[in-house]
Image (cartoon, rainbow, N blue to C red; front, side, top):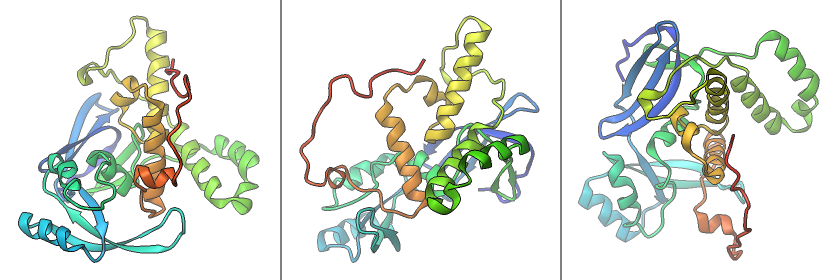
Length: 267
């Protein structure tokens, strides 16, 4: 990213797109009513494999001349610290194909643009300022709401600090104003009457903020499992916890389906 990039005005982070050259962030400039884009060309998609790499994995790494480094992640189930090999790729298209070539891998299924958001602790639908290539949150809980928040949740600060931190994060994000933006350029069909437009916009921004999904996606994505998965992945990354593979989450259980569960679309 260009370190000289500076935006004094608040920019609402609306969307992110993984490209061969990096991740392109799309902002809405509420002061100018314009769309601004910033490309972070330093970020590369990645997946994780065991450390040290297995013999077959080493051959894949050598044949493709991939960059690797050793990282540490906490295990979700044991809380033990695990050393893993982080394997970077040059393009998002290569990521999932590459994961199938390793005998055992993690996190290759996470969309690179969302992976970027998780790693940088960013949220969609809220304002940032950009200074020297660094995104700085331009939001906080308004004082009146802060008093109400502490009255309701202050007891959790000591009894359950992780829950308190998560609730505080969501409360802060959701208490921010929603900009009057039209998303026709993002292939989102808007309602005919003004009241429906405002209601749908507020619902989409709230979902985008809580679930860490792009605002245009929040307008159209109806799969609750997609929302929940992104909420979980964002939390695990913030806590430096390895995102388990689906079969690890099963914990030996047989897959069960409940007809009608988690299928109600948002209003």
